[in-house]
Length: 176
Image (tube, rainbow, N blue to C red):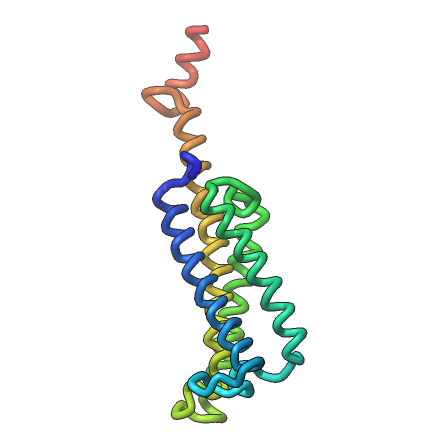
């Protein structure tokens, strides 16, 4: 691991990896039901809303796993596109992830109101895993935002001369 891998990035990596692992289990579970009709797992109709045919959904899920896997690898190595703090990533990830989370919450509320809370697993599997995917995006955006704030405060603190403030800066200029 890179020496830039600190406590915050380590914590972020761990949570991102757990969220990715959960999503992988969901994809594997649905594939097992689709291919082998595993009796102890919920039936196929409870794994997806039906908006996409299963082969298209599986392809999209594999793309998500690859992308989220790349994020986790960048965090593991302590370098790479998704690890390096970027302003252009922080706000869009937080905005999209939060919007995704809110829309999923509304969807859950509608399902509970229409279907009833007694049928928690039936049809709720996709909703639960949309929360997982949204949480991944929010956590990644939050990591970028926090890392940028830390970098900015470190940069600001390193440019202020000892004694701090503008008065010290003007003393330095006069001494030169």
